[in-house]
Length: 442
Image 1 (tube, rainbow, N blue to C red):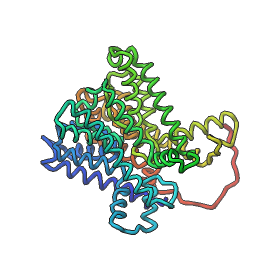
Image 2: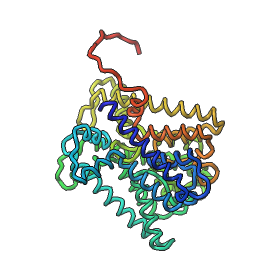
Image 3: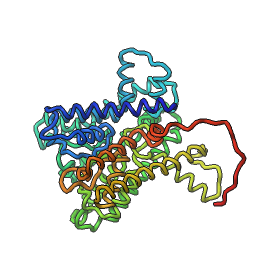
Image 4: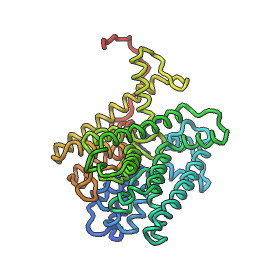
């Protein structure tokens, strides 16, 4: 894809964020004072489907503000260019080649053929899944509040969960529902479905209908990697927190497993929490940074380096250690360039996060592991945080410069490391010159 097209996607997100911030600054959108930096932070967190907050969402914003935040989440989760293109298609507009190319990149669709049909399927899937989540959560919340309020809360949390945003209309997020089976199953399932990617969902649907003979290598990698990461995350949380009196120590076994399941799913893609993450061990927080860096899968609503990048890198390392030059999985060979690209993405992402962490650590003079946790949460567009001592994220303790740093990380994590780097430094110039091989001892 051309660098100009990447810049269009990048600046579309910037325009969405600025528009959202200006709307949130309106007097009837918030309660009390709202600095422009905090408005930008909130708008970015919503548009980049992160969930980090420097203002208490239910208390500091009005219903109109909540609607703006929800629209930012929905548009940001789909992708601004995707949403605009869909509206154009619905009006009967014919897209030129450039428009379809941008749409292809925005949706992470593998080709140009069938992209119109795929776009319509994406929006139909979004409507069906979010309405289903609304009904289930709305009925559950109805036990605790009036019907119309419960329906609104169900809708807000369904959209927020499916788009992997983590915004909540409860000041303590979902901590009051840490033992509720309905919330602990529905919200994580919405998060998982949204994080898999629309292409994967479509393949699974066609495979179950017998319209597809074999799942693609991409879909298999996404499903296996996602499942393994959730189980490994649960195992790490349970092993490190089982006897921690500040977190899991006073829970029974059922509550511990339920809390670990919910936390593991949210570790990679969304910022909902049923436990106080400030009570976790530093070892657990460190492992959490790794899971948050991975994020979700391509074409989904989550950020991070993506599950496929992690899988390709691990496969590449495994075959290198075995001395084999033909990496493969599921009886399919893998392109060496893709594996090299995975290495590059991991390296660049790690560089960005570490530099941001060091800058924040030196400028804000706060706890290092919690600062690292916050930067990884921003980059992975996760939204989990060790908190500011109250109901806000750790970022609330940062200066305006520190908050802008987090804003850039959220934007980078949403549009992708390569895309962000292309916007900053430009695309490399193609050359047909090939030099003689130089041998290097490793």
